[in-house]
Length: 231
Image 1 (cartoon, rainbow, N blue to C red):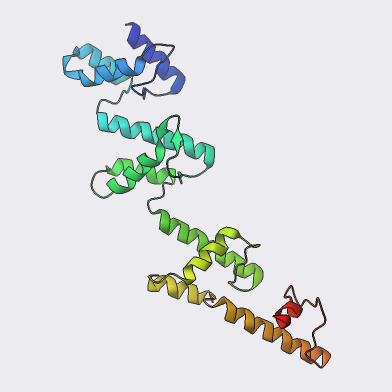
Image 2 (tube, rainbow, N blue to C red):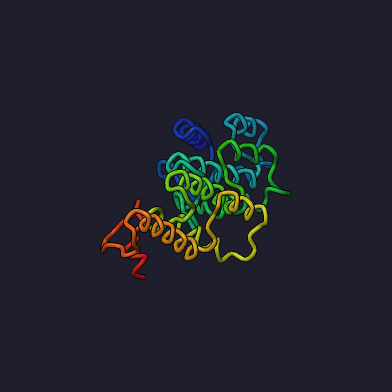
């Protein structure tokens, strides 16, 4: 009765019976006791099984471990607003990154439809690389709308600048992605683009002033034409 009452108090406080085996509650090893009930279910009286079941304890060990991980993922999302857990991230001594890595591996043949749905409803990211690609493409579109081109400088965004630079050296980029970038007029050769930009501004300068002797410090629409001519 004592342990059962302790478990009831735990559920009242936390809303579930997902007590980790190593955890104590009010200085009692409630997690260890619950683990023992789970492992010795066949030896428990029907009444005790019913009472524990009515408290909605998770009897299956694998399911229990899954529920623990999902509980921490919910807490993580509440705190950080997404499910993009960084490598080796520990949440209350629980390796949440390892848990989500296992979920991605198990999706095809071990996860249940119910588990997959619960993860989807939480906004779980199954393919991080594709998620990052979509996010960067959205940022690139916003950049083009703001600056008129797809040349991202470090001062605009270090993350987007690095991503765009890496794309230019990527040898195995999928044709669909190459097409999407080309449709956005992505600049594959930055030096050539900048030269063309400079020449265009120099042509406009020559039309305006009748010569190509660009004054020191001259800037045209945020383009440092004097510096371009000097280099």
